[in-house]
Length: 212
Image (tube, rainbow, N blue to C red):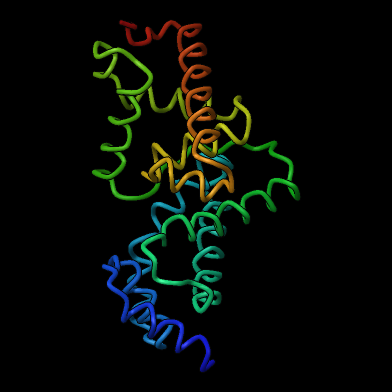
């Protein structure tokens, strides 16, 4: 498409520092198959983790992550290199997730973890710092299993906001973009999710952080 090619050329010529993801997408737009392989290698694990924490189904999570990446590839020409790739990709993922939730009932909860162990350990430590006191962090993996179960009990918008921010490591601005809302609403949903998780953890005998 000559119009799209010209649009990309103009973005390249602007005084704008493109991210690695932007450059990767431009290579995909240019027809470089290796670029798509790199995209899959980089984001398949994080996408599976995102879907799993919202569906509790490991096989479905793999299927949805593959479908997301396929849609990213097929819609690559719709992407403009403005440093906002993660928000764009996770919006595709969120829409797929919502479509799936509308189609299927959730009567089977499967516990499984995917992705690199080191990355997961980092995510779990970040999560622990948000919902429990320092004394509880020694049992962070056990805590994460509990939190994963509790995530299914909070409202969808709050759960998505929490998982996008804490597990997928999106900024709140990116979360707001994915959720198609404003920054204030994203902050409010994250706060409510944290409060509800703390309350539920307290009921289970897990002590929350002391407020000052």
